Length: 329
Ligand code: PMV
Image (tube, rainbow, N blue to C red; front, side, top):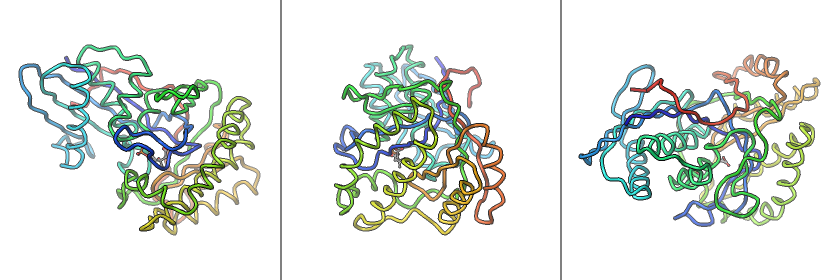
């Protein structure tokens, strides 16, 4: 059976930065994210019973080709885990594509592993509850993939303390946009996995852990009240702190470029000019600007005019993954 799933990326308001248990990919602190709709991974999985071969293809700039070794080996390892969980033998043919730059701090692993997990389950004829999907996606080693199996506003681990992500509000509750100012689409030099390992060694890490419970409450309340002026300052503080921790890790990790700073400065200028635009940044140089959807066009136009910005991606909150007949191959 051949199944294709589209899974969106997500952008975290409260970040996961630091892995408490690397074997199970469990974080030091809960994170809260918004599932997107334009930045997506599409993944087709075909089960090949009677073989044990695994073929991994990806589509880049329209061309379907064998995936590079580092990408293919991550897929193969995750397929081996899924095969074991489902207890079904056989090989697979996988074909994947992303609608946005891969490994540039835009959570391509979140959407990619969420799509791979759901498509593999589908190809094996399994229906997954969202909790099971979230736990299986996270076993890929990408914690943020635990959040991408759900739509809207998502917290991981769930507030009840179990390991899966849970939706805290559907997308329709609050139409926020994420305008990404892409200052570099190059893959990052240091993986987030390595960043998670180094984070607890930063002298700033303990202070961050103390601030997290209050920030989680603020972000949950902002989502419930649809209050961008409550959400905005907290997400900026979070993102800047993540990068201060990265920069004060040993050895230091510097994801920012001059372009990152220029966009951050400009976002402040947009606010001074009356827009409700707030920046957040994942493990890369690109700046995600969160704003109410009615301000998306103005924010995108303003960011697109900056010399440092290569391109602007206009994205918004969305309802999460879906199955499609539109196969990658
Ligand atoms: O899921 P990972 O291992 O790619 O790590 C995600 C790290 C951040 O994107 C920086 C934060 C987050 O919570 O998404």
